[in-house]
Image (tube, rainbow over all chains, first blue to last red; front, side, top):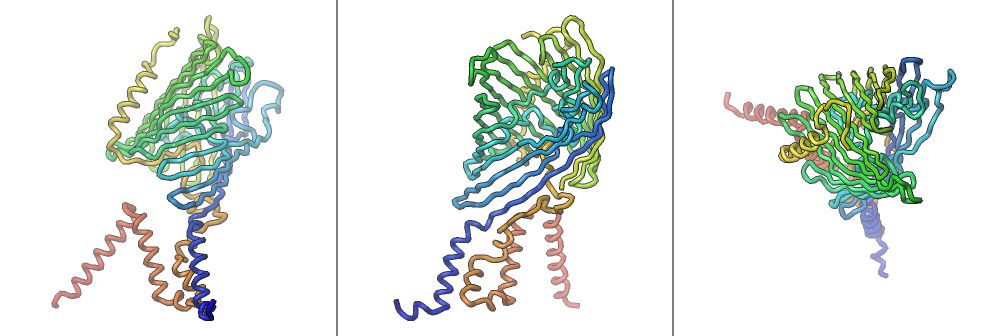
Length: 362
Length: 131
């Protein structure tokens, strides 16, 4: 080694160059925390009893998340999402049945997403607990009123029962049947093919083998407005662990939402669930809305057929209003009525629900 | 299974599938946008977190902008005065400007910037004209 090689300037430059090369891949590292609180006052009336509840609005529950991602070189990005919900008096758990005070369902701390992902020119691969490929595929909605009313009719008052009859909850007779929700899975999303993304997932949902396939579409059509839709298919094997008469349960469906530049918007959704035990239930939904400035209005209508038993016909009608004074705050109000007719002419009093509340992103 | 009892709203499922197919074909000419479910945590600013919409626990992105590898090497090598020089500051600002220019196209801020540039050029031309 020659003396000149120990020259501080040369040595410093060499070390600095090496550090710079090592440091370069870490330059895009970022870790963040974000969340929201969504609280509402909900009045429910089943024709026999009524009560006012202070609830956590399950349309978009109180939650927080950690996210982190880093460019790992070669055009690849790796990241994590860890998201949980923390609800006090969940709006789809409170009920009018039981002694006074029983309507307080307490606090729940629930998992939503705990996943790692790798993204690149090939698309994105995600591993862990999180959205199945088609979760939300029956719920595409550009109305701006989703926080208080959307295809998931049972998220507000879902446990309230028709006539106080066990098993005839609002959520069970008119469910949007939105594929397989979140579960432990391996998911693949293709890169954007124009406005289209192809999504696949396979995993275990409640111990049952589950698969989902479908496409997501979202496009800005210029003067024709904005269009988004999803259509897909899922299957869940009830015989994964032990023989079960339901066998493979299949869900097919989709939803589409169109927002015209004038502010008028239309949303349609439909789904069907069938299994080997003879279940063949349907869901249909339509919403018409209008957005102007910070205000959004809508009216929706939904139907659930044969969801608990053959011959069941449940109907929903609702109106919604959302005021967003800024991007972080939603103030909302919604009212809905639900009816149920059963085979043999059995009918029940309508359920009526009014909710007023606010969602704030922090 | 044939559904009995309910008057048909429309053949909703078939109609929706037709609409989806037609929309997919008709919409191929549109420009993609990122659909974000309104059931998820909203995008954009937060009440406490401000414009970023999230509390940044750690980020190297700003550091990357401020300290390009070349500058880091110069600084450690004893060239810090040069790194802090006006020339270097100008170079750093120019890099930031280039980044902004690449990402801000079609935004109102970018259009305003273009208007300002045109006005400056016009004023310069005006000053050069014989009185």
